[in-house]
Image (cartoon, rainbow, N blue to C red; front, side, top):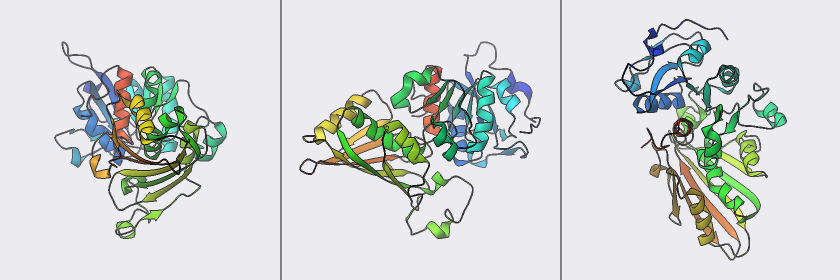
Length: 349
């Protein structure tokens, strides 16, 4: 990857002024995408960090501002420069495409920088599955953690590379993992997922064109979506995952259908989820009052509701989150807080 000299003044490399409290130096690579801009927005206001650099996804782009963040962060997005990232940041947050993240992440870890990656480049542990879904990542660097904060906080604290879950898997796993661990589930799992268009990324396509999406809902990626492998990896079993694109700018709603063991009631489901998330600040359990996307848009919350049909042994879970925050940038900052040993709510409420 070609490196370009940065036009940003060297002041960003000097750290905090004498007498000021120490802050972690954090940089963002891939700051021009939807999730990247959310990262810059969050980090610019974060009381525990100094945002040292915001970089684009390539080394040849021209520096440019982010008009939507004026007076929140007035810097310029500069070309991607791995050497500068290694020199000026304690933690680098990657909002890059998978191939670029694979190329950048490992060298940064090797140079002693901690990395939080929002792409899928480092999520899959199986070499064979990774070769299929993320072929640019030939090997995983030492110290990689699958960074779902509510489930793996202890490992995240010391991780060298925190690989944030995808937006769809975050919703599915937060709902299903505690129930599976409690032995409440049996049989097949069907995840019917619907996402706003920003989940497809900023690069336009026929599928994300306004005229194609307005007034329509479309299923895609049936039996071929890479998030299936991620969900199955964490649940250690098969799922049927069907995503849909809906004409919203942001937000995910998943309706999950699963069989439960005889005698399981709504109280059992609620008890298992309450035990798992009693101290989790960003998971809200709504019980039989089913949540909606508007309840979580522009927040880092994940809301989970459920209904049980005890006669037929069926459970329906409804899970909602904002794909750009709890499904991406917000979860990344939540993991950053855990890494830094500070309250994981910092900068997110």
